Structures are given as C-alpha cells and as structure tokens.
Image (cartoon, rainbow, N blue to C red; front, side, top):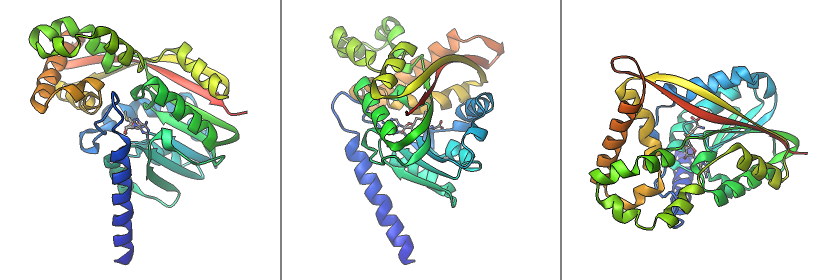
Length: 295
Ligand SMILES: C[S@@+](CC[C@H](N)C(=O)[O-])C[C@H]1O[C@@H](n2cnc3c(N)ncnc32)[C@H](O)[C@@H]1O
C-alpha cells in the first residue's frame, strides 16, 4: 500500500513538471492525450515495417535503448523484447500514464521533454518515432543535442519524421478555410509572423542533416519513404485527432471553433484522398528516416 502512495506521489510530480514545461509562448501548449491516441491504426504498422526494413530488432539486441517521445509505450515494449533495457520518455503526462500500464522488468518510463533530458553517456541506442516533426527548430536542436549527450560514444540514433505535417496541410487549405471561418482571417492577418512560426516546424532532409551534423553526429543518413494506408472515415478522424490538438493554431481557437476546423479539415481530406472502394480512403505520408552515430 505504502509503495502505491509513493507511486501516486511520484506520478503527480511528473504531471506537474510536464504541465509547466508546455507553456512557452508561441509553442504547442496542448499536451498529447493518450485517450485520443490509437497508434495501432497507423504508427504501429509503419513502425513494424521499419523495424523489419532496418533490422532494428537485431540492431538493439542486448543494448540499452532510449525511446524519445515514446507515447503510450508500444514501440518501447516491442524493442524491450530484444534490448537489454528500454527507457521511454515523453513530455505528455497522459501518454506516460498510459505507458506505465505496460511496465515490465527491463522497461522504464519517465515524463520529460527531450529538451530537458539530463541523462549523460547512458545509452547504446536512441530512437524517436514520429516526434521531431512536432517541435519547432529551437526545440528540435535542443532535443537532438540532449539525445547526443545521452548516447555513449559509438551510440546510434534511429528516428522518423513526417515531411507533410498538419501545419502545412492547413496552410495550403487556408483560403478555403478562411471562407468558412472568418476568424482565421484575423488570426492569419500577420502572415509573415505565421509563416515564420509554421516554417520552424518544417522538416526537410537538408535541414535535418545539417541539424544532426551540427550537434556532432556522424554518418548522418536521411532517407525518404512513402507509406500508404487505408482508413475508414472513423480511422481518419482517429489518426488526425491527437496531432491536430497540438498545432500552434489551436491556441487561438475555443473548443467549438477547434471542432469546426477539424470537421472542415476531415471534409477536405475525404475529398482529396483516393478511395479504394466507397468509404475506404488511401492516405499516403512521406516519412524521413534518420540514422546517425555519435563518434
Ligand atoms: C505521434 S506521437 C508518437 C508516439 C510514439 N513514438 C509512437 O510512435 O507511437 C508523438 C509523441 O511525441 C511526444 N512529444 C512531442 N514533443 C515532444 C518533446 N519535445 N519531448 C518529448 N516528447 C515529445 C508527444 O507527447 C507524443 O506522445
């Protein structure tokens, strides 16, 4: 019983610390909600494909692994079947709480942003699946620096980063959306400021390579892979809900407006995606695969 109380106390400390970290101005302030997140619809399938393609299960065997932005911990748990140990970190307390349901002897989870990671020379291998695209440039640079610091000499990094982020899709659809939601005209009145902010989230192979090399990584290889997945309308809604909540634009909208924008967004998606058969939408996403070594 005593240990449960201690556990609850520790968990509440993580929550407090995580909430405080998310409030920098102009940054994403809405934390990822585990209840919204169904990684099995999309992320897990792509992760399994990547693990096979890059032989990750073999690569992490007997290694100590850091999984950055571990979310609900599903990928960390797969890696833990092969690795000596896996330590998952995520800045969302909700995600970490969900991950902790799967705790195992060689897996630990901790609520912490990548930018605040203080482990030094502790891991043989680090992964970050679909995390870097949610960070603006300055955070991304700090995060990569911390990952570099957390790896032992000779340690390796493997990460994925979406090229087409929701910010860009919204930007492209802005003229249409502004017609439907005049408030967006006010919000985007200073286009230059917005372009700068949204530009900070954009990831290209060149920018990522420069970032990783700038921090000190060597043998930085960035490849682009396109994944195609089929979804029902409900599936589309489920995969886009959690990321949508975290877009910088959402800070300027109330709950009802967020809902209205989401409906417009899903409506546009449905119109633009090819349908395998009525109601089955083929969604393709371009992913950058990043591999790098700490000398
Ligand atoms: C798309 S989910 C990916 C989760 C997991 N890697 C997976 O593939 O299922 C993105 C995760 O990154 C986390 N995240 C975003 N920015 C972060 C940061 N700066 N530091 C740590 N975690 C972050 C979010 O809280 C969220 O859980």
